Image 1 (cartoon, rainbow, N blue to C red):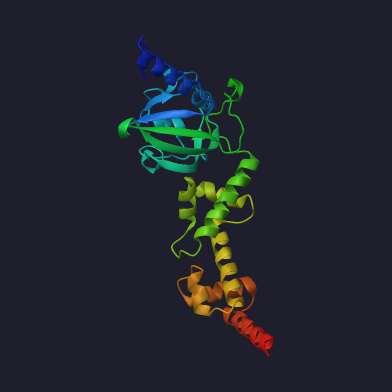
Image 2 (cartoon, rainbow, N blue to C red):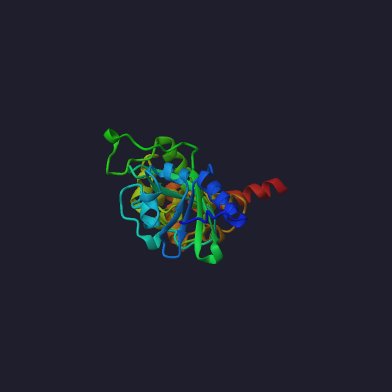
Length: 262
């Protein structure tokens, strides 16, 4: 990006603004209407491990930020929430450094220059610095995130499940889409904890249903409110997990209420 460095007051002010942007401590990245990098400040270049502006300015923003997913699988540009977003509240995403390291970041965007460009700001999700990797350590295959990062990401996936389990259409694919990860990556994260996303969705649904039954709700109400489409599937899953039918839990709860009322 060319900056006006003329001798008039407006030129000097613009030059000062340019220097502030380039020296800002937070990574800043400008994407033009064609999805190319129009500007990257020093911190953004350092964060991603590039050598300088010549490595990134004019290049495809999507490929420079995350040319593949953390597990090495393809990441099509049309699935990227950043390019073309114009204005977006803070969200999570994976970026890939020049050396191939996957790093989770917290990012946000805003429209600038009359809507013809997008300003992206981001920072490490876990406060760790990303430095260029020594040549002897470089590996073309994306490294798996550190154990702490994987645990915190898994916690975020659990939170997604807890907030959306009541939707009967909610599935492993939706968990993956919410985190911008592949299904395989999400399954691997849950496998680290000895479970699977599908099993956790069902567990949360059943725990919610049991709580509703114990509070006096009807079996059908608990079934539908917990994300099950039919009573038969719900009853079989409930019995398999708790060893009793939902109706037995409901009956016991009703007896307890009557006993307390006497």
